Amino acid sequence: MKKLKLTEEQIAYILKQAEDGTAVAGVCRKAENSDATFYNWRKNYAGLLPTEMKQLLQLEEVRRPSK
Image (cartoon, rainbow, N blue to C red; front, side, top):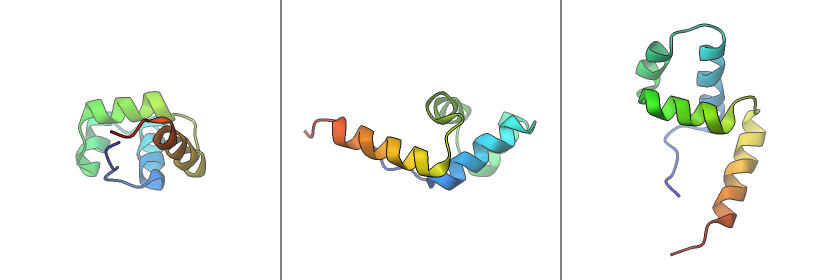
């Protein structure tokens, strides 16, 4: 699994900004990520707290077979 450039807290903050009405393009520009990355994060992590996101990522890492 590819290592995240941002921490779980930063991702949660970015998602929260967009929920609060900030334009997605503006949020992505500040975070230096693409819109597609934002929408993938939103699909996977919307509504989760940073600690829950970290647990989810750890579980996904364990479930993936190593190559």
